[in-house]
Image 1: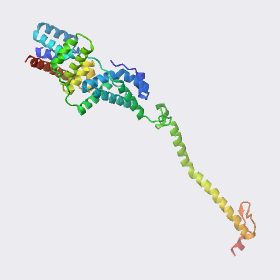
Image 2 (image 1 turned 90 degrees about the horizontal axis):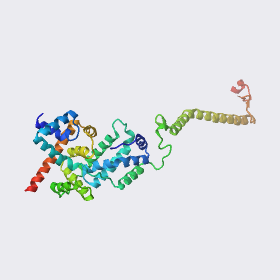
Image 3 (image 1 turned 60 degrees about the vertical axis):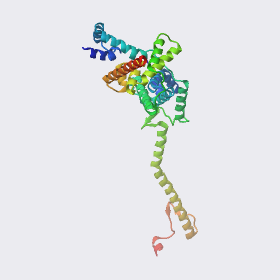
Length: 164
Length: 187
């Protein structure tokens, strides 16, 4: 290994203790026998390594944490309720929380059964209306207010007479 | 060295502000130091520190422990500091020459009093400020933070030989700068 290559390794792996044991041994032996490389190693340590060693570790001021905390709290919603911020364990059904899923299911059921509810209500209204009409016409016809017998509508005459 | 327990990380990821404060207390020192050595200004370094921890708070729930937490935080810190430096960099007020700083340093390596520490700090600032950004970042992570080549490569997402190359150039620049100042002084 020539001096140029040795000096390159001195500036990196050797100085930074990244060299393998074998390489380190070879370089150390070379430095014992080569004054130029030995001087170079001394220069690298003095001008490029030692000035940066032992520098004080700085700390940020307490106001840094206060500002971070304020910004975190300001970014969170005011009311942290079960519905708004469900924990991971509560998001079970299709990514929705349990209460939200229950509400959505109830709405879906309501939409499904509401047509039948509506038609039942309408039928009842229609029946009531028809009964009222029958009563009214019976009254007009024969003064009777009960035109329904046995569930059948009685016009009080035979069919033939009715049409003649 | 940064060594935060997984429990604290999990609680902080769930939004526990007290756990996040513990995380902050244990890691703000090294975040601030890296930021300061890159941007070279106290206020800018504090702004970078704030931004780094807000990013950590938002992203912690996505951290999958695939890489080490330390490497992840270093990466966010370096990237944020570099962005800040590029946005706000202007020539620094560094009236002291290298030689004056270096003289102060030779004196200061014998003592640990506040004045000596300050002199050493000024020398470090002066030395780093004259380096290109990429070399400065590598040198800071190696010399001041004590990361090995593999850790630096993972943090910066570069090849390990690129780490060697940048450190070599940074040290060459420091030696050349030192020699120039010595010659200037002699003249």
